[in-house]
Amino acid sequence: MPTSAAQTLAGQRVSTAGVVFFTASAATPLTVCAAIVTTGFAATGKLGLPIAFVVIAAVLAVFSVGYVAMARRVPNAGAFYTYISVGLGRPAGVGASWVAMLAYNTLQVGLYGAFGPVLQPLLQRWFGWDVPWWVLSLAAWVVVGVLGLRRIRNSARVLLVLLAAEIAVLLMYAFANLANPAPAGLGIDGLAFGDLLGDAFGPLLGLAVLGYVGFEQSAVFSEQASTGAVRRATVICIVGLGALYTFSSWTTIQAAGAADVVAMAGNSPEGLLFTLAEQNLGPWAADIGRALLVTSLLAAMISFHATCARYTFALGRDGVLPGALGRTTPRTGQPGPASILQSSLGLVTIIVYAIGGWDPFVNLFYVAGTAGALGVLILLSGTAFATVFFLRRDDEEETRPIHRVAPPIAALAVTAILALVVINFSLLLGFGPDTPLRWIIPVVFAGVAVAGTLYGFVLRGTRPHIYRAIGQGAARPASTSAPRPVGVR
Image 1: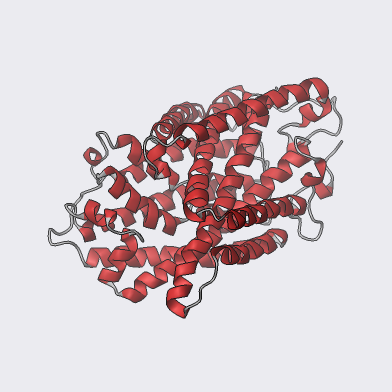
Image 2: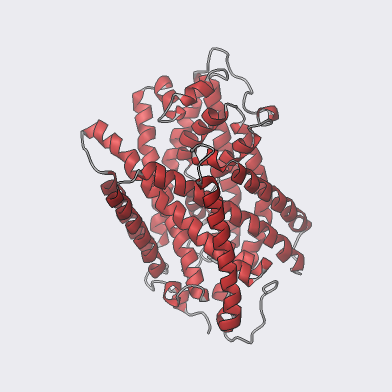
């Protein structure tokens, strides 16, 4: 059956800037600089996080060469699912789709576990309001749900304001750190490769890569943005985030002092970033940062909601999920049914945690966020290998030598980083080394990938017309006899 207008996302409505807002907001720069940087110094006792951010940015830049080439050749809101389908085969693509659905929905709903608990003490301190965390999270849920049903430019405008504000405050903090260095003065501590080597190598790279989760969402908008916009947004996001993280974490070392930054990080429960801001600029600056931390979480919710809805839409359109989810709202061109499903999942999660009385910050935000990041890294590794095979089979004249060389390097590098993350998973979770979650979560993702792959084989034998449409999206043929795209098996 040919793709109908109701199964096509509103095309060419997202600019380069719009894609950047969605991708960079998902990475939550302020949260990374406040939480991951503090955790990195305190948990490892080493100063190598700034150079770790540089290394990860370099790896992702190499990965993006093949990733963007795939986005140009196979534009699809399913991104990872589509690329693995055309590169490694349809069954593997279905397995990837299951992993993507679990990873991105986990990331999205996990953010509700941070929004309320982070905002709650601020309202108590500033206004004397004692509002339950779940009420605040429900308020954020309403905002996210409404924006998810409206035209995408509305979300892009909100993300522009929120992202600009958090970047501005991070730069303000960084320059204040440089203006108020420790007595030892400025140095290169944290920027030398020697700071990265040793027993902290794995943990530092594992923590650093968490800060970039979200950059890959650029390809999710490939049906609604030009190829050039996706390419530019990917590069801007990787380079911009890398520069911001490196600069912020390095200036943190300069202000705290190389000899004292580890101890200060361990004694700063709210984050060393805010401790130094209050010390250098005053309480008002720290309060602004804490408020923008809340809006940073809201921006990430909006971004991940859009990604989850588009993955669900792509799978519904291809028949992997119920077809009703693969339809758009005529007035907005947005994946309305998929967006409503994602909102329903968020609502159920908030209600369950509220009724159960569980700690949303630790048991939802930290666990779900770290688990979701692991899922994204698994998809990055699979996509890197899929890109290698796809581009080797592709005979387009525009394929350049770099498209042959970069993907294999990226595949090996991303897989090595994935292995480091799994090995150091208990540290990334923030729990002790004996926590069973260190192996339960990776095993769950492995099981989901295997189950999805097996389901792909089931579709091949029982529903061949659905099987043939996997990974083709809006470009799928009007009849089952049409030729398959290059590399799809």
